[in-house]
Length: 246
Image 1 (cartoon, rainbow, N blue to C red):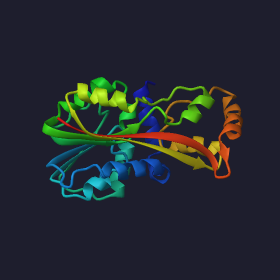
Image 2 (image 1 turned 120 degrees about the vertical axis):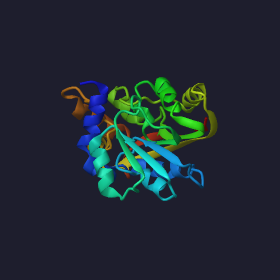
Image 3 (image 1 turned 180 degrees about the horizontal axis):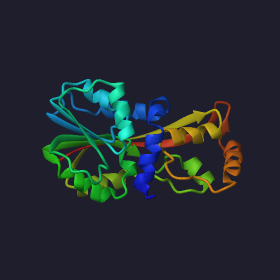
Image 4 (image 1 turned 90 degrees about the vertical axis):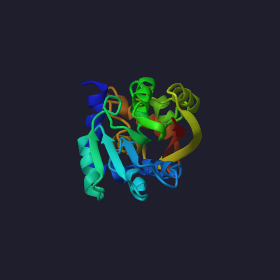
């Protein structure tokens, strides 16, 4: 099973419970929505729409045409159950790094680009679908994300965690002009390390097997020892936001 199949399997497995656990992704969607123009362009394409956490912000504004994409058909089904989509909506299921999209005036993505296997190639792939003066707006995770957990578990992140400067360079190399960038640092608290691990699974942040046999108990002991507070165990997140135009 390759990385793409693992990601699809993970998000599809937890599609029905995703919204209950994706509190951080909801706040990211709200922050990203604040970077939208007052009036949306004629055609907007959302990548990795999932269950619709960011889609609802797009639907709060007048839209002529909306193109929704996700790698998981199960996530897309949940979106269709969660909200009423306008008639001018087109659904495109597949990996955004490979899918052929119609021309569009805006590409938006909330907490998606960290899953790109080849972000330089993917940005160039996506930019070619942007019309003249088209707008790219997205949020993703920076290298400070889950640093305590990754260091304790001695594991690499299954996601690609580039710095803000690295993303800015890739965006500019793709032929876009940066309009706005923001960085936000947060901490999340959980009742226990087990609850933290469970949450990572339920939001698709752990699509690959994380532990070798017998390693889970050792990890839990170490994490409880080093990162416990009266509010529970904590983990850090580095959240990045970008707005650029062609």
